[in-house]
Length: 221
Image (cartoon, rainbow, N blue to C red):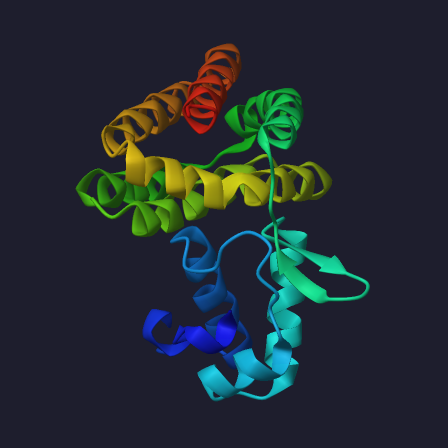
């Protein structure tokens, strides 16, 4: 399938990006937008050719995406975009519902004024964004910011992997239900307000509700 695509068209501006970051961000955008669908094999040589880089940054980028849960490394096929069914989605959201309230409670204790300001800036950009894939990239950055604020690298890694494995499905569902963009942004904003008030209990409740709303959307026929 890769030979039918032009990944270079999806590449973000190279300014201040290493080759590794360029490949990672391009593939992430292609997955978020649905250009790379579930089960797609990501051949290193072909990606390197399309993006005019060596295979070394491609290999590094695929490792990052695997750690983020966006791809899996098959011992026979190499890197493959995750492909999940409804049972998989339910299981992953059950896991997220156990981990993310814990992470956000920690973030409520540790988040700094600068991190809150950065989260607010991302929310402002999300509120203006109408393209689901671009919105999802901003949401990914938002969740990474809050995950980092938990000050728990192990927990952050677990949460990121679970989030990444379902990200493509969230992007696809928002194409079908574009009104969800504004709803999800409002849910994120309420979460930042609770974080600013250091209200861990409210943060945990908001995260749980947000995950439930998102799962319901993913399971719609």
